[in-house]
View 1 (cartoon, rainbow, N blue to C red):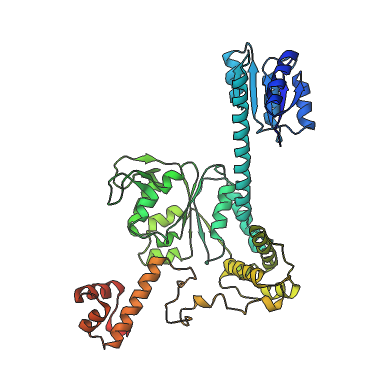
View 2 (cartoon, rainbow, N blue to C red; view 1 turned 90 degrees about the horizontal axis):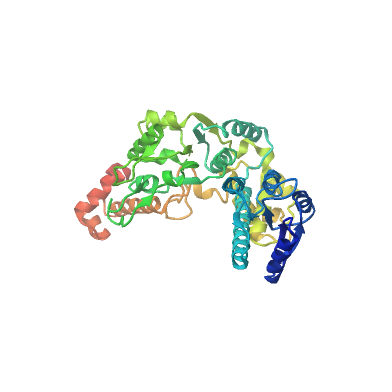
Length: 465
């Protein structure tokens, strides 16, 4: 569909020339001879771009532009300013008010068309980005009307507009990331970057280079300079998820960054100023981690300016039906499927479950039912209670393989799972050979000294057998 361009100029010949040039290139045009007529036309017509003369009778083009920018419907409309005798001050004022471009008479046909096409293309890209951002925000929207969730919303409304650091605690699957994103979305930094770092998923030896970046040659494989997450989040929000799993050396550097507002890349000496709001989350009891020496007390107090607890699903049972319906709708939209009706007795059964995996487990159950059910979701489609969370119980794994979830219900990283498998296999082999280290090393295909190192690394001792 061709774009519609409104041409505003008090000279009839200029309007006619612009109309001929634009319509000859496939655009639709509307005309106005004054700023007042321009504003009326914008109220009653869909316009994709405005070409506006600076010098107009009565209300000037500059004044009209200011009014256009104050109206929500036209605030972002691309506006090209035109004048035959505008001053530098007027040109500067037009740009400050948000004019997309500014050109002088006499008009050049090619320049007009290039400028119009560029402005329309930029406007289209901006609209697509805004739509994508809206889609993302909808996906991360928090849902609920329970007392627990209303109390949480009240806290977020108070803390979000401030610069205070927030420590979000709660069980796995309760939506700690959603809380962090809500704080960012409600803050003055909403139009800047939200950068998430999963501290548990990054190996200890890489966490510092990921957070702070590195210079070329800082280590083997560092063939160029790379910005870290702190720099990428400059002006925005940095979300440190699973902060309780961060290594001691990384904790020290994060503390320095929070104290000074500066970071240094790995292998670099230059201090780089960063303006970042830090939000952190954990499913661990950080107070206990501090007492046992696994987490720095000074960093804990730096992060825990405003503590927020993410409530478990069992404390917000009245939200389960809302959540289930929302997950079903979202899954259907994402997969281009018709939203299936769900029986009331299914919703009642979902509400009565304990949900040890919290909202994450509920989402999994709903998606599973949406996939495996027929035209509607009935009790026959409801998985038995505990089926999806069974893998979390390390005491009864489904096979000889170790469980792929940690004690808190989080899925292990590949590195952690591989270590768990290797430890179990070494223990099994030692058992089979009566703890004869030489024979075990031969079966495992490693040197005896190497096996001793691995046993020390995994804390394997004879009494574990």
